[in-house]
Image 1 (cartoon, rainbow, N blue to C red):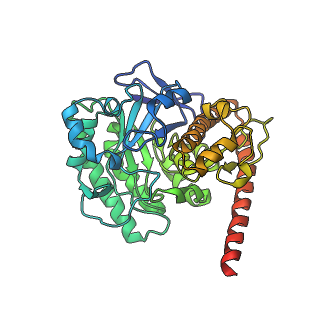
Image 2: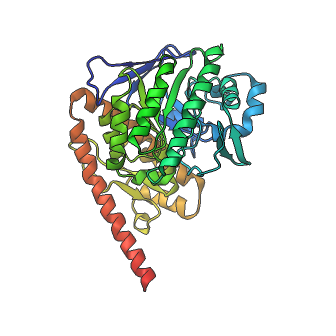
Image 3: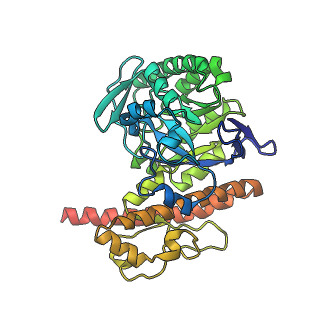
Length: 408
């Protein structure tokens, strides 16, 4: 498996391609690319059969280790690829450490070990245990074990320990990777730690260089502790970190971020040179019964950035979630019906919203790639930014109403 950058692309934003996969040499995926976020290999609310109704294009499943730990014995006995184990052999797979849609608990640090908070409690992973799991999974790509427990509020002492631990764990994992016959063709992504301290980020990058030939991509780690709060991170806060990391990496290396980034911030990250994302944002939206409907095309007009189908005003609204959308949910169901499903707590309500959100996110990334090719990504950013500001204004008004009612 390899990553190549389109020679016609500039440094930022850029087009690239993931290809030469181990078992699926015919697959070729363009970047910027979004991974399909899963929990235990299953997309929340969406079965594998339903996924085929959303898209027939090759996809990469993002599978968090935290959601697969309880299956490690079964996978060892199965002795097949994790894509086959989860029942989706047509998809490619990428193993990550934490679940970007759930807040990762802070603390519990130990030297050369990373805490994983599974459904059965805390499990401490060292490099040997982690790489043993990776060899059992046999993924197409994976992220090396790291200490990413930092955010914008982290003190310098925590940041320094995160860098030290991440570099040590990365070196140990790569040594095991070098000796592994199972993983010799697997795509390796190394984490760059350092929180919001630029000197620490630079130090981490410098220390990674001796193993650069074994690393095909880098993850900008430690920007947050995952969960829904990522949606509201200001890009101005992360931009200096992202710019430093991208500018100091080899241009032929893939650059990834994880988390529930808003579409507006995704565009800004793409413009900064980031290639790989995930759909955990779709899960966050669906959990709050929201569907994204912002306009992407110049001639399109949308009534809102997103709509919350639990609101009473949609009870007798018989139009689709978004006119002109070709997803299964919009082609066969109305807003009013989905509102009814949510009101009576029918599972189909969340299923339909998730179908639409994933379909729309995949369409959004196709639009981003087209805009890079055509040189008009700024126009898309302006259009999305205008609609996102309206969402923020509506949110602020709702908060004022809530605060006012509490005060009285």
